[in-house]
Length: 313
Image (cartoon, rainbow, N blue to C red; front, side):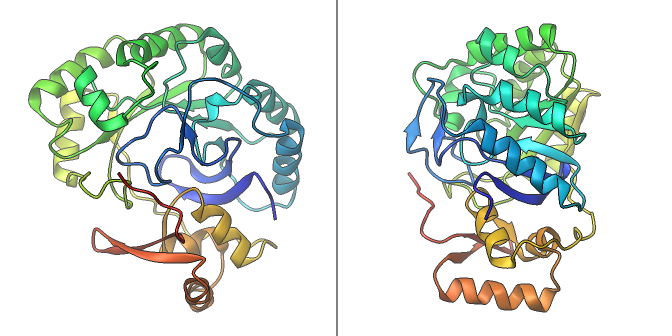
């Protein structure tokens, strides 16, 4: 079983994305109310070595060599990837040894640091987040480490745009009655006008969140917000690709590795494993019986999550 890899998972933004998890669960600078991984147990801003970077690169190269569709290698997963002091070296080696584009999914909290911006310059796409336009809303949604401020994040995004020649796709998580007021959206639009990202991508809660009180908005409201925020803004579409080709990785190991990092629907699991629906159903029922995973009803769907690993507050 690959220690640092999960997927490829069906990503609404990146196609079939091979996840690379270089941070232990759950080291992060935020404790977001909508996080699908679970409660932050180690809220950190200090960078460190969390894994053997050579092994990470070796695993990715080996997996790509096995074939199958991989649209992006994505540094993301159980925590904030820019906390890794090795991320720059890992990106450089992946660019040198593979031809698959590299994406970094980050909360953007450390982009105010020059060394972090320097580490990300070789990535093909960086996908930071910006969920708030005021410190109060920022605290309510992202619950950051005390060392992190919204003003610092915005300035970090501006600095990164000046230095980085790749694509920046900024994600905004829209949460009902928290960051949806007209006043807040007007403040957010003013900030976006100063950052000059390539895309602004609106998301909403569509998987079981850390806090059940965090609610998503409907497609109509998302579309209305996108129109207000400007021509670069888009609503993240549903994933509509067919199933990925089946690989030699076992159903069990593939599902468990992915569910440690994100919740999945039955259709998601069929896509990432390439097995038939009857095989997937039987395998999931077995894992539920063993209490390795559990079913969580959410938004008229059933999601599978890693058993007993989610927290709430």
